[in-house]
Length: 348
Image (cartoon, rainbow, N blue to C red; front, side, top):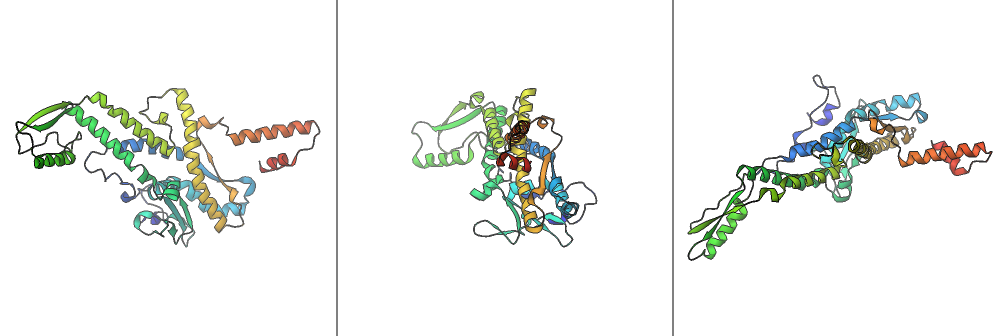
């Protein structure tokens, strides 16, 4: 069953739906080592998913009539139900495509079942309601592709750390004895070292040769390699890419109340709100194209159930409050309000 079919009828046995494996199993490229990066990736993504659950798309009361509410009811319900799925599609494919069926039901056109075609420039063909991610728009790369090397580095560092700990950091090098190694043997050893030797479990610790050799043990100073710190640095890169403060990740060690409160505000400002704004832009584009009598600004969103944002004022809000206070003082003094203040008050 394609993902679009999910949104055409209600499921009989679940409240949500699994995503296709093809859309999420991008760790399979690391087949030679254990995939420890999965859990680190999920630490970041799960924080975002939980934040998105507090986003609620709604209609602006002042710009929406009862008739408009009925017209936009299906679109509004779809956005509130499928925000996470839309973000997931955008991360994995570089775009999210929406369409509406003959019964007026909105659905996500699943990019994973090859039903979407792009032109030579990467633009989606045959669909009107498309939102592109910024990495795809400017680099023709998906978020999935951009973080691939970072996830690979986490796997290397974590595998090495665990394996060297198991083997006490022992590693062996073989060298020639009396007459040394001839050119052919040296070339063979170099090839074997590049292919087979290493500090992860899938690699060999010793190289076997037909020549007479001496064994020289190399004792790795595991602590000096700072592998756990390197894992943390890569996780910080993941956090930075998605806009998640590192203080919110359980491994950060920065869990004081003050740090957490400030990080949560930063998280919603720089991660959740921008994601919600991106999806909002798609909703407003749909209104502009399909419901031309309704102002696009009728659709908006709020963030609920986040205590840390209760007293949070953005720069725009501070500006509006200052304008309102200035207007009040001018009225009390009997002064005429300038046009720019009148305009700002109307927009409020």
